[in-house]
Structures are given as structure tokens and as C-alpha cells.
Length: 169
Length: 187
Image (cartoon, rainbow over the protein chains, first blue to last red):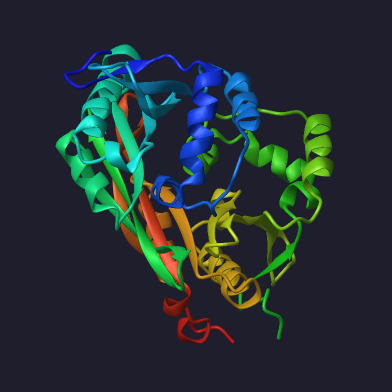
């Protein structure tokens, strides 16, 4: 669970809730993360969600830097046990921490967890097609583009595509 | 003319579970049908549970629109379609369809029921796009969806496991601008 730049760590609800609520407040981050309309949540609301979740349905990690232990993002993994396939979500909270290889490093750790710990046979993820930096990072981690959902998102008065990427064991 | 009626079938109110519980129970016991319909393992349910679920889920809401499929010839219940709104903001929905009895497959009922569901999605709900997924080994369904207007948009390699083999899941989509009821021969 330790890479060259990052490590996957447990998610302490109080610390993570503060960070997740702050990151979500940033519309650039929020729009890169998913297609939901901008929402705002208090740290207390996020904390309740973190404390409620059932391990087994979903695995949560915080991404911490090896150098100074700072929490810079998260990885969520949704395993489908009977088909041995998992979906992965990842986010790097502060713009200043993007483009430094942290996300790619953390994704490689997540994949190692998915394939070597959960014994999955496939990993999948979805991404906004215009998020080229993310797509490049996923490709560096081994993912292949498998499909394009045309015009699936509406934003700023026009339509945008999503990509689906997959990686086989 | 009604937007919910074609040349072979009509979409009827509510899902089959609300129209004919015994038929729905029979379809649910058919595991080959279940395997074509869904990647989840079959979950058998008894009549009482199904009636209760039906009462709980049958209320109209803005999250999903379920229909029965009935043959125009004899009003027989053939199957269902279900349009599930992925997002009103993005005006995108997922669609599912099933025809319960083998004898009713390959006769154009499904294709027409899908086209009626798309007409409802685009002309009544004013959606921009409808998405579905289909298993890579279900060539008959894919042909039907293409006839209804869908295009393949991606193939998730080996996304599920059946009888020891990895099976692809194919994603298909249709945009409002690509769909025309008339061009498909509809009234």
C-alpha cells in the first residue's frame, strides 16, 4: 500500500470530512470528479456518510504523501463480488497537487489492491472525455479506453462525452 | 394515435408486476431469461413479497417510468420496459426491456416496444439521450437495439463471469437527434 510518492491510508472520519467538504466546495474539483451539479455539504454531513458506510460494499482510502504524510486525495473502490470486477474512483483535492504523478502512483496502488488483495479480474472507471490529464494518468496506470458515451453530460449550454476505461488482470 | 401504441404492441400502464403477478413469478423462475436480463444472480421471491414490493414501488415518481408490453392482437402481457432517469440535469436515462416467454422472442415485439419507449423518452420526457447495456453474447438483443436506433458506443472487455468464461458488456446509446419514430415505419 506504499508507492514511490504516495500511500493508501485509512480514512479517519473527522479529518477526512473536513478535507472532503473543502475540496467539494471548489467547483473545478467538483466538476472533474463527477457530473452531479455543484453541491455543498458541511463537514458534519460528510462525516455521517463516512461513518455510515458498510465495508464490503465499498472500500475507501485516503491518499497520503510518503514525504510528509499530508492527505491529498481519496480512492474509492466498488467491488462486484460475483463477477470479480471493480469500479474505481479517485480524486486529488487541491489543484496544486495535480500533475505531479501523485494520482497515477495512487491508482497503481489501488490496482494492486484490486487485483492482488480483492482478487478481481477486471477494473473499470468512468471519466469526462475532456479531462485529458486524468485520461493520460489512467492510461499510464494501464487502463485502455473501451468506450465513449456521446453527449451524456450537459454543462455550460453544450453536451460533453464520457469515456469508460478498463484494465484486465 | 397514441404515443404508446405501435403496429404490434402497446405500452401499458405500470410494470407487469402490477398487472399480473403470476406471470411475473413465472418469468422470474426462468434462469435463462434472468441471465439475459441482468448480471445479478437470480433472486427468487414469493408471491406475498412480490405483491408488497409491487405496492411499495408502483407509485409514480420522476425517477423511473415502467411499462408493460401488451400484444395488440390479443392484449396478452408479453414483458416490460423500464426507463430509469440517470439525471434530469443531463436529460439522460437508462432503459431496460424484457420479453418473458421464449415463444414471443424474434417476432419484432421487443424492437417495437423499445421504439415506443424511446418515443416516450424523447417526445414526452424531452430527454437528450438514452443508454443501455447488453451482454456481449446476446446478439439477438443487440440487433434489435440497433434496429430501434441505438449505436454501440463501447465494449467493457470481460466485465462479467458466466460458467467460467469472461463475458463482455456492450454499451449502446441513442441521441434524440438520431431518433425518428416515422423513419422506423411507425405511424
